[in-house]
Length: 439
Image (cartoon, rainbow, N blue to C red; front, side):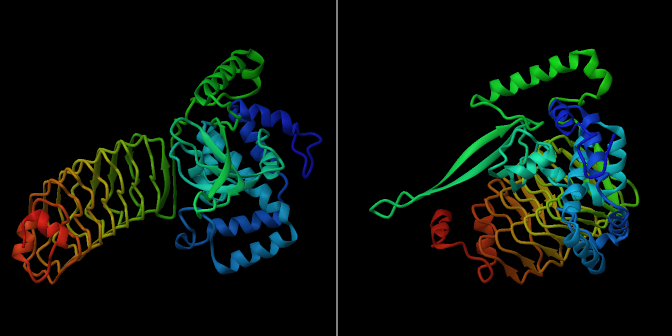
């Protein structure tokens, strides 16, 4: 069925059209066909990438390994440019098949994170979390099997939104300024596609409904069901957890997550904009949580952190609105910049005595926070740490304080008391002095 470097015995257009109807078996066939165009030398390089130490592979974008392997891969690609496209195209369709419920594809994605993360579109862009923007020539998207893009155009493709819609924009230039020097604006043509990259009409919601009804009719016919496997939901309801050598790279679609014992690092963006997860239990083996790891998890209510945790990365819980309480374990040493920025429901915070550094803006915009306790040996409260925590009326500060950054307690109810208690360390700006009655 799959003929190397040829579409003669592979009905590319027919399989692509089945993919557009949500046929996960067709997606898997497309992945296998693109992979059939790679040779043994490429597979050997891929194996070297898979075997590279975990710290040498980026967790968000996944474009790296050791210098030696990268050099060999680049040298190979210069001589076989089509192989890189075929590899990323194969990985793209493997990811799509896995995310929509194909069990064999799911096993491959979980067992081979280098392939999962090196796809023509990243898995993050194909999840309903509005993440990422990349530019793609229309003819390449056609070669990929996305047939409803114009081959002559260049698209800026944005990640899927929560309604299962992709935005694709075509840049048309800009209007120059008028005689007064104003009015210069960029011009774009906007196109919208459903979750299977079918072009939507101007009335997007009505068109989206039409596409879904068309898929329903398609799958109601026995001959379509006999030759394919239907996707498992209109909008993704996948379950996928990808880890590699002690590092959790990506987790989607699981409501109650227990991070496997033995994981030492939760990678950057691992749960980024995960709209499904509600409860996460982190084992004692986890020592660090990466940047943006739990950012934008709108339904995350409970997080259980075990005693092994040492470092919470920058913006780890950024804009995770639903978290009301979180207990940081004793033994933690560092809280990154903006770690809880925009956690509007977080009501209190007791920072462990072991923490030696709290990054700036760590609790900024935690509007529900009423009380906080900082460790006794902390020397610095950085800029904007509790900025606009509008209900923070009680805070215990250490006697060891040597520095309080600008606007660390801006518009907090406790700011008046702190300004009086630490006049040599903290002063509100002039407007704020007037607001607080400090003259």
